Length: 457
Image (cartoon, rainbow, N blue to C red; front, side, top):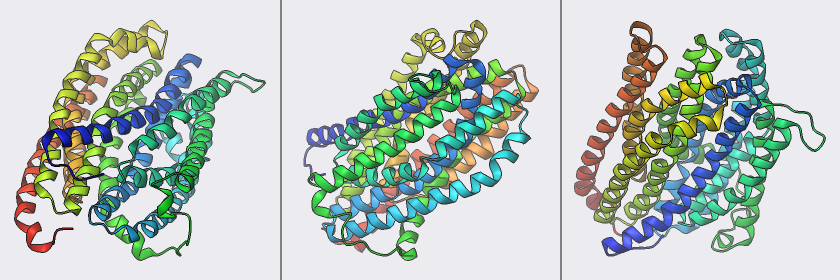
């Protein structure tokens, strides 16, 4: 990151930061995308099993990852304020916290996985695939969380291309292991959907190892000596990250868990309906990586400018990102409208599943419009370290407004399973409006308070 003077310079720097983040996010999600697509090729039961497993895992992963994302504004503001001497210990404490969170997830999962799956009305084969997909995937949780912490540090320095390179290296490896373990190649048995969990866990280990090697040997990371002079775990340091990260994590959890809750509520419908819902949601979520990347870039840029007390510049970055979100929403809608049949056929060859998937995609066109608008605003708010209000907005819009309205429409109107998607649209739209209001309110308040409480870097 560096200071910019003109709008043209800001747009150029923002593009330089955001494009690698976009490629990284798309590549990371492509691992899940190919898990789902390749599992669907193994059979509808495998696709449904991976859908259920993903529905349980994704909210946990994204929620915990939200806690880890707190490292980005912390480091960005330290860099903006030229307080680089504090960076190594922040990253080391972040890795300790990441490991502790991973172990907590694994231990809790060992006790609650069977009861949750048994409580669901699933076919035995689908339940078996979902269970062992999650068990195999869990062997890579620790390195995954460590990598995400290291990636936040890399991105906070503005070196987003490095994260991109790491993931681009790992993506074909993930595809290779998917092919081997799902379909039974090179002498291995065909595990079906469970094989995608094995492949993903191996990929998590690889990206973590690659990131550690890069940070130890390549500038500008090498000069920070992240892996030298280790400090002891300190709960005080953990709490600084948790104060920012927990609201981020829960806000993301409330958003992602509503999609998982919808998938779980759909377990009362046929296997074909579950498979079609998951296929449409999976592709729409792939498109969501675009506005999410814009939001992550805004966190870096705004955090840097706020740390340097350049509030006007931070506001300008916010306008750039939100404008980009509007354009992205229109682009994503066109993609879904034009390629609905092509997308549906990617996931399954069953004509019934294809037709149901296309119907779900029509609803996805509308819900991603609000999502593509709201994600950049969330990223901007994180750059200001404003996270508590976002948490409240996420909870109310998704769980008080979105899910109940979806449940009502699904159970008391002719929409049936599509009613849940209408509920998602309602929740996302109300959340996006509230987030925009909060951002304007915060920027106005910051303009008055920050000069009084901070001196320029």
